[in-house]
Image (cartoon, rainbow, N blue to C red; front, side):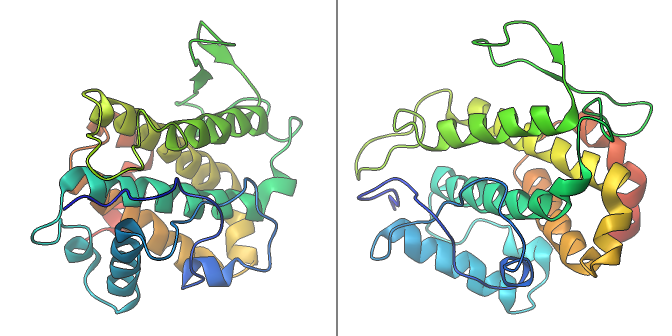
Length: 229
């Protein structure tokens, strides 16, 4: 069943759970939503209803019967963009070029930015600069109709999964940086349980559908083994 219907995603998803908890905090990037009345909006509501109902997260991420896998993935790409956007917004004031001069996840992992346009070679950047470029890049991919078609009957491109894997891999790096360098701030504001739920949802989804390489998941391996059963 095709889901991308009339319009591309715009702003603000329904406020449930994680989004509601963080609604008082600043937003790092404009949020995206699905237009009411479209089939994709209905699938988005279905996914969020399942997530809010207390169903096992391992089950929530599985493709619903009769739905198209590419559409299911597209819904979650936007959802994770929104949630990680909110997550980073909560610690934004603590993540500066002075506190985080590199985009890293501890001493063993450092990420360099490359987009093939303004940064043609992998370039070391301060974490806030890296994450700003990352979120802007993800937003452009989501808003590119040749990658995320918005009309019924228009197929996804052949490189769709390749692009999605790159998006989700890069979004995972925000989890890495926030957990390793700013987790104390999340604990201080009482956000630990909410962020852990967001992370588990993301982890179960990308592993269920094989969307992030195992080696990319290594920086949070010990924590993942502890909270993802």
